[in-house]
Image (tube, rainbow, N blue to C red; front, side, top):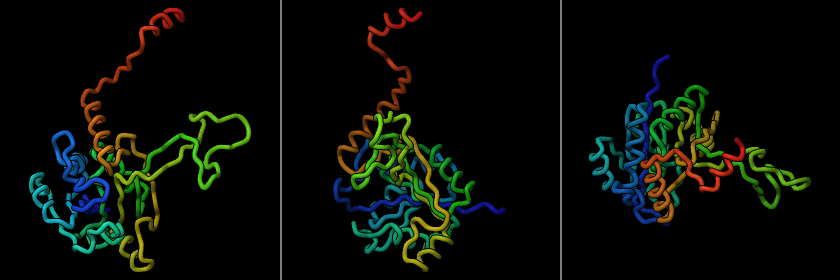
Length: 244
């Protein structure tokens, strides 16, 4: 089997509603979009890494990090633009077998995790994939329990069936099946054989507001410190001795 040509597409719209020009907002000294670029490079699975933007200003970012730039049509840069249309336009102008949407607003996702997502996609022979996070928490939908019973004793969270909210840190598609689905039904983000890949909690931090940006900054500092040992109150010393 011949190797698939895989492109990492990093979308970067200049306009944003909740956090203005968020892709250029500085996070610990680097523009937010830089983190996804560096992670895509570290993944080591892409033939090309391309910023896909409606603004030529991101060409300077692409040049700075030695990757490529694609300027999408202006009508695909509004807040009402559908992701399906952005992906279709990119596929029609960039030859590939697989396109991987590496989200520019997921700064804590690592290259290693991106590589694992791509490998899962290929191993399962999927047509489309979206990352999710697993949460063991009591959930209701339209006033009804999703993963617990209201009768009986209250279930402990560790015994619950996990729910899987979308994260969108990575989305990916086979180009051929995506284009075919768009022609047949007008949408393709979840088309063909669909898969979902659970990512870690760091990757699920998505930047949409200034509060998210602050949270990511704190998280990055914590990761850089890497204090893996958990510290406890002095009272636990006596408790430990009493159990010996």
